[in-house]
Image (cartoon, rainbow, N blue to C red; front, top):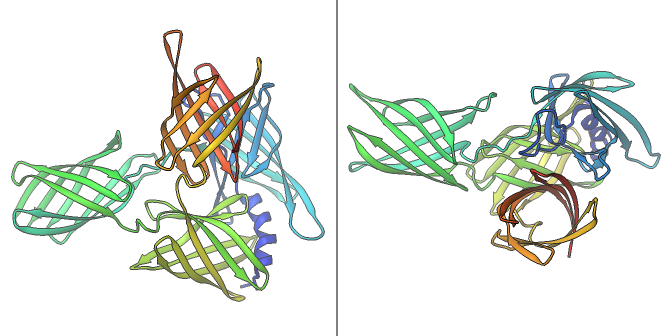
Length: 428
């Protein structure tokens, strides 16, 4: 294995991430099947190493397309006859700045993008799908309930198949269980369960709703009756987005680590993300590995640390020795709370409005001296969305906002039946 330093990671990382990853941003609810604007996730495989990234594609006031790859602008974004093209400029770090360009060519077909990235070093497939929210019910749940006077403990595992359908598994020291007809709608999980305990067999129905890291479930059975099944998410304290800072002789380096409810994770790798391997939480001990590579060279960093409240402290073990690492949890809504001045450009000129978000995750939108409560506010990492319902001449009009927070700036778009409107904002 080659020798790795933090500066190697910086230099190699930007090149690898740029060559290996791309993600585009989510489609509006009202978008036509051939609308390229919105959010996408592009998945690539380079030498057996999967990677991801984020790219925002939006339509400006002049009708032209703009885009971002992570936080950086794309060039020459064009879409015609179901063909998407753009140019990504990659700038290498260091005293002697270098840059080179990658060209993307893709086709939008049946709601998916099939494409490739082209550079002087060759080309490779880059295929995308619209970004969809992960169901909150995903993950493993510790269950504790009573059957008559007997205490029962079980683990419910909920996973998602590639086609989006859910699957579930029920593990308990009391009997063997087979689950079928798994459904998830309106934030409620339901399935049928067959249980065998010694020579006795019976059927039951299960329903549950997840709220954060708590599960409220109920079992209904002709033989056993009806009883509540409360649960708690396994690894709940670890799930979320973390600002992970590594410190070595080469300096300090901070990237985001995102841990999903199903205990899979991704590590921000400059403008993209790479999967985290072997994530485990044992009591308060956390371990995982990050593998980076280019060509036939592979670099691995193994993390071991302690979880304490909203902090993670430990170190990476690399081929170049130990690197101290600490992480702080990025609270949902933390960066969004406050007052924002929003500006958009329309055919009638520049329009200014005010968005206010409170600590309790409620808020208001004020435009033209009319203040309206916002609905369905969601903040996930740097992504924010909400809805505004307003009355115009006796008709109810819903505007949905989707955007990205970067420090004290906010960029996104309002989406409605009347079309899309680009918005920029600054925190007051």
